[in-house]
Image (cartoon, rainbow, N blue to C red; front, side):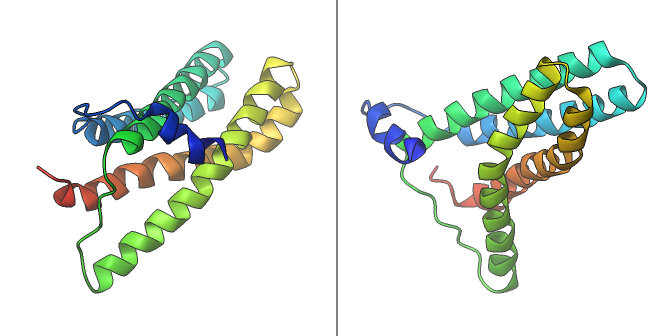
Length: 154
């Protein structure tokens, strides 16, 4: 509900936000890399590095969400112009991305809170779901950007 009304609050007039989709894709890509590095670090039992990487990922994901909502409060919606099979592929990726992106917010929060409280077994249990979903969301975010970027207004 908040994200549905938030864009109206941010509507501040004509601001050049044309760079934000590319920035958002970059942030998503960086989150993908950090997530993979975080996974490698925990497999190597390097808990301190893992914590730093995962908190950095959460920070960047939060920055992405703010930037994404701000962009959509300032810019008209961009329609995907592809046809045929590519259109089906695009919307399949987009719909799965949207659903899982909504799910990852509470999942990531619960995962972080469990670790913060020292509930490492519970953290580990939920992280087994959180990591692949979060990674999927960040990677498909980049893919969606690459697929729709030719249709952004110039």
